[in-house]
Image (cartoon, rainbow, N blue to C red):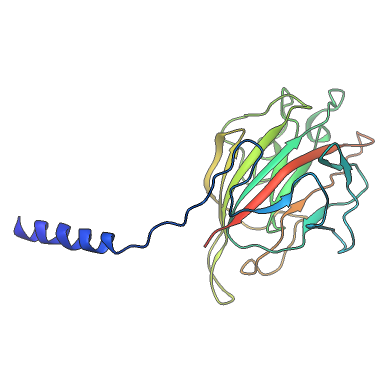
Length: 233
C-alpha cells in the first residue's frame, strides 16, 4: 500500500509541473478557431494555386469557391504534415446522373490521400467510392450525406506518416467526421491514392481540391466555403 501511495504522490507532483494549455478561442458557426490558418474565407483565392502552379482558375460566387469542370484541380500554396482540417461543400443537383458521375470531387490530404466528395444522397455506388470514403481504401462507417445543394462539412484529424528523417517508420492515419458524424475512425492509410501526389510520404504536402471529369456529365459545379486548417505537432 505504501508503494502505491508513493507512486500516486510522485505522479501528482509530475502532473502539477505540466505546462498550462494554450488558450484558443474556438470560434462559432462559420468562424474558425483563433489559431487556425484560414485557407478560404469567401473573399479571394490567395491561398491557392492551380495544379500546374499557376493561378487557381476557380470562380468566386456569392462568397463560395466554385469548381466547374475543366478549370483544373487546385492546391494550397502551403504544405502541411499533421493537421486538423475543416471543409464545407455543396454538391450540385444532378439527379439524372448516377454513381460516380453525380457531384464528384475530392479533398486530397497532403495532396496524396483522397477523401471522396460525392453526392451519395440516395445514390448508391461502390462502397470505397462513396462520400466520406478514403477512396479505394476505406468506405465510410455510415452514409451521413445530405441532399444536393445543401451545405455539408468534413472535419478531419490527419496524422502524417511517422518518419525518422527520410526513413519511413509507420503510415499516416486519418479520422473524419461527416456532418458531425464519425465515419472514419483512426484509419491507417495504405498508401497514396492513384492520381494523387506520389513521392516521399515523409515530406509535407498541400491540401488539394479535385476537379473531377466524368463522361456522363457535361459539367459539375462543386461549391466550397469556410476552409481552415490547424497544424498539429
